[in-house]
Image 1 (cartoon, chains in turn brown, yellow):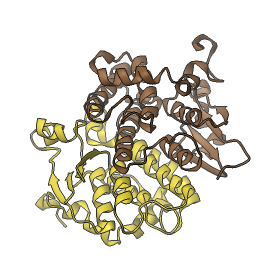
Image 2 (cartoon, rainbow over the protein chains, first blue to last red):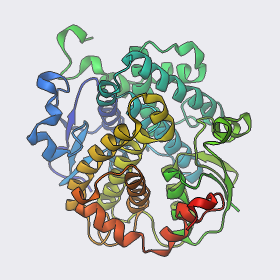
Image 3 (cartoon, rainbow over the protein chains, first blue to last red):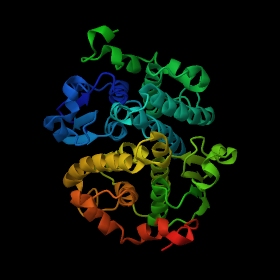
Length: 216
Length: 211
């Protein structure tokens, strides 16, 4: 069920949610167009009327695919997995699939929204401390869960949506100087994943909108 | 029987109660009081069930799950009864998009732990994030809704909507600004599965809040 038109991903180089979808496309070997949305310039271009028409939540990413406009990275990833061939991003087994979704949601609902740009701008306290607190709290829980579910990757030995969520969140953790030594399982899985081509090609350091001073 | 660790007023717990009710599945509820003694979700005993120290948690088929949407999709995939996600992949994506808008984009920003931490006016903080989310959701629902959030069948999106509107009302968000959300909610709250699972009539509902 593919379309002749290339999917269009509205993305910001350093947005962890955008990076998730870039990884998914790369894992599946799918060509797509990227439209950068600068979240900082002029108060943030995600707030323009033009962008609001694409995503009324005024956030990245947004995806135009098969005549559909989607927001929410995990909804995009599951849609891509269900409609495109290539390596499965969610396992066949329902129990493993539930574990993949649990880990993905722990990150995508339980950690990232609490340290995203908009919220930390709003919180008024020490921004780094706020972000560190919520990332650490989430990683404490995630470390325990991964001890049960992980093989080579988050769930068993196949790369899944859980891994797609993990790497960008560890990147954020490192930006906020969270001590990763406290989370050895997370650290180990992340180290394996960052060497995988799909994760490298989609990395914030080498996107069309990466600023020169941050380019790899 | 599946065992659901739940709090009567937790919107995330309510979502799973709705899903079980829609499917007609019997389950046991183990109440977790989020307020008493600093919150029983922080005990070592509960941490062993859910290391994130949050409700709900679900023990089902030998599996222990956290995260309400992961639970709901698992229940839908393994139990018969009305589908909680549509067959069509595009509609299914829209259901997930709306569910995630609520479950990632609104609820975590106004849940108990975060508003305790934020230090500012708690009601104002919650109102801000609910209103911001509802402004976006209202626009999306204008495109996707029929009788319910996506077309004319009840889905996981509706399961997420009703508890979030309940929270909005608790924080005195003006629902007149969101007519599509309001209308869909009014239809859903009359559905038996949403009534039976309502916070006002759970095993751990305090007497003064009982319907």
